[in-house]
Length: 509
Image 1 (cartoon, rainbow, N blue to C red):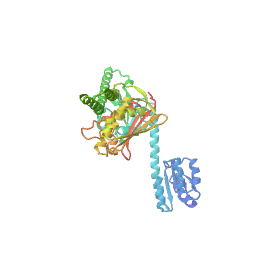
Image 2 (cartoon, helix red, strand yellow):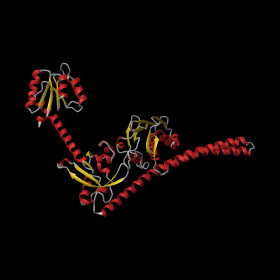
Image 3 (cartoon, rainbow, N blue to C red):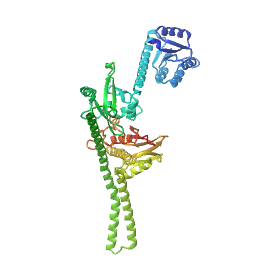
Image 4 (spheres, rainbow, N blue to C red):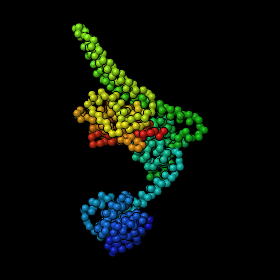
């Protein structure tokens, strides 16, 4: 096994180099020798090196300079330093370079070989893992089914079709959306499901092979039914399973009743999704109607005041045509404001899904007009900057819904934490690349609790006090953004929460 490991050994003392190289060669290592960093770099560039064992103090180019250059070529290259100097500064630099070992001369043969064996074992394990991943890629690439490997804590590998279905580029994105893989499955009567691995595997085993189905809500918020096959790895003690999901629409089953029953259950899930969407919309409507009432109070108050003044002047005989004209103009202006406000809210609640190529800044302005009174009442200053004219294909009303959810959450946090009304700020920043537009919404309300932030976009998760939050708003916001082929994430900045929404300039579908 050790004959597969090549060590690049860099040492300027000929006698030390000869003795140490012989020890490694007798132990089964292939050794490439260099007397300084310059020679070692040339050997490295023209050879396949597994481990670099280098002295630090050398002529022409020392070991630290050599390793800095090697790190630029291969950041993961295993490095072991071997030096006669017990220098604390050298040790700190070696740690900063993420060296796998730091040995002091004179080093015993057992100590040296023990360190080499430790690094070799890790290296061979990594190579074995990479080969294993490459084999899985080769197998999975030929399958149209959604295939992945898991220990039910994390997805360890996934096929291209799995990544495309969940609209992700890395498994880290999947794990940010789902705390553990089973959260992706919808628990419903007749389907394989369970909150724990044991419960899930038990319901799987209890069902006949032809009746093993699972349901998943797609990123486009569409329920999908799959036939599921679970195969444990050959080494069962490793706890890994290969799970294959086959879309029921591709199955050539003769059991028409089974297909009809599955389709019926999928329709039930679709109805549940519509109900959830409606609940979110109604929650927003309640808040928006309150905003309408507040925004109408001022113009109605102005109209009432002017009519009362005109009535008073009429009773005292002081009313003249000029005053009537001025009062009529004021009232007409206020009525126009009422009509504009009503039209803004009508447009927001109009149940029409219409794709529009729109400037992001324009949609932000429209949303802020809807919430103008709420923002003023809570003393929140709003700043918009960046490429506000950047255009994207989106569903304007649904996108406004997302912005309203984020703004309302920030407003509640400002109030719940008693943030100084002179300091409350919301910042909108728009950036664009060749293919995407990125909107960042940042507040200074202190941020989101660490225990909640990773699951913030899950259903029924809320940061608000009991009875004040539904746990639907941000969950629906994520579904809406994914429906528009975008991404939404959140992190804490030094001052507060920071939501990042990324949208393609043009739709792929």
